[in-house]
Amino acid sequence: MKNIRSFEDLDCWKSCKEISLGFKQIIKALPKEKKALVSNIRRAARSTTRSIAERYGRFHFKEKIQFCRISRGSLYELVDDLITLKDENYSSTEEYCKLRGQVQTSIKILNGYINYLRSKIN
Image (cartoon, rainbow, N blue to C red; front, side, top):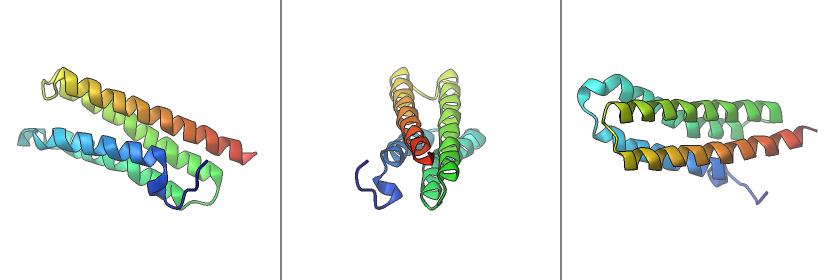
């Protein structure tokens, strides 16, 4: 693994940051009556990067893995929110496919990082 000096150097954090920015664009266009959905999307998107950042400050690998799992769970929440946006016609098919692909890629990167951390336990 390359030299990591900050959580910002982690590919999984960078990938989640891009997703957060993508959802930010979508929620700007949502009507005010979708306040609860906007709130959930913001919370989940922020949780993806925050959990990785918090993980960076932990010492034990098992703790680090748990925070990565929290981030992964937030990514799956965003998939559900994305489906809701599509079902309610607040997201185009193109936008949906793009963000869904980005989320799936982030999940794969995060799973790879979790596997890397697991290998360090032994």
